[in-house]
Length: 150
Image 1 (spheres, rainbow, N blue to C red):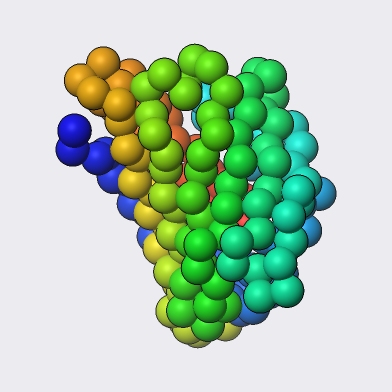
Image 2: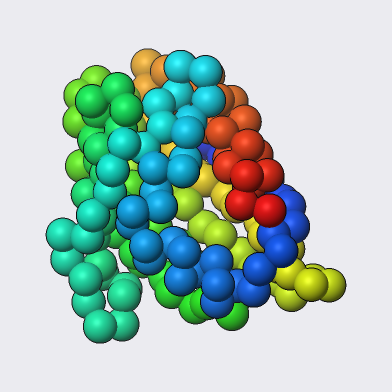
């Protein structure tokens, strides 16, 4: 089944290193508020933290009681970081295998231009039909979160 991709771009008045440092502070993850029926994050914490960060895992509890794990799969604070969302709780586990989220960084006057991309991998046609409206809400949540970070 074809993946669903969303992408937003915006400017943050911080360096890419500062953005990545904030990302590692899991107490700040609750600043992601979601959008409409898409839940925000209640709390997040490292369950595995490797010295090089790649392979680190973060357990995420959402405001609606759902959960997932995010694994850092790329960590280059100058260019981009990437996470694999996996181990979804039901019902999402029945509709998606995983998501990949990538943050790309480009220096910009007094800050960083950030492109935030998420690719959702559905399980079959039903998963694709469920993930399509979720992707639209996620795009709006990303835009709101990016604006809040600026």
